[in-house]
Image (cartoon, rainbow, N blue to C red; front, top):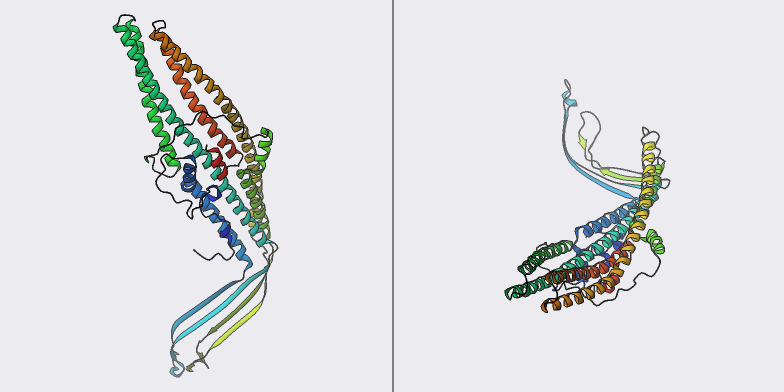
Length: 461
């Protein structure tokens, strides 16, 4: 690792996941094989550490941290040294006067050391430093926003995989029930107490259930592949996620009003913070560009020496000699005319300030809309968790009654198949409602910029 005199690297996280991965390990981003089952916190930690987007954001922070160091270096003197060794072979032939002719061979060494130290430049270095610091702050805020978005995405995909597991289980159960109905209908037809149409309808339902089970299995593999890709693994990596836990009561994680949430997010969300920092950087860049068209004052010094041979005159032999030269003083550099380039550069940077101001306004507007939509989605999902619990209970009772009626010869096959279909739909809706609710909690936290390691541990249950 190269020397970090200005210690700008201390503000850069050790891993792409920054502070969002809570671990007592010396290598929080070192992973083995995925756990079986894979828990949400492990999936999120893997994604934050290994996802290309989080690594790109981390690298951008390093770039801007080095830029801050480069800006600080403008306050330090520049010292340079040169060394030269040449073999000199010179000959002079004077026509008609051979005694004036000469031929000399020598090895000449020369070296110099120079110093240039800017003392005052009308705020140019200060503006450049502010620009670099603002860009660094923007990069860190962008990294935080990327981590929040990745956190939310992998959590959503994790719950989608859980939902796919639950839907496959429900599809398998539906297939079993359809097979039982088909067997029951076939038995009644064989005993002459039901029409052949009952058997055919039950068989059709059974075939449809088999189709749905196969599709659910394919959807599960697609969801697991997406989750594996989020974690930087091969989509073909074998992953096992636990089944969706039922029997939970939705809590009210966010007690403040949606207006307060929007206001808070528009003030402190990482994307807004990044936009603010970029605006500050643009303002500093304009000031830097203006100052570059003003005089600057520098302290300069130089010392040089050489062993260039000396001669008394034409035709005289050369003699070994040494020489040295040094000076120090103050230099004032005044830009007088730059072909109007400075004028247009200032106009360009001022326009960039306007661009960043509009970008900030857009970021605030988008954050407010995202919080509003996520809040409404969470309220809907909370309500639907209760709705689907009641729906599942009713559908189960309806199916049990229809099954009993059909077995007793009172009900018909359509009643049984309709109840069976309703139960299957209720199972799928219940699973989807539970996973949607869990994902919506994390999504709203991400839209507000509140996700952290503690949230992961609390909300992953």
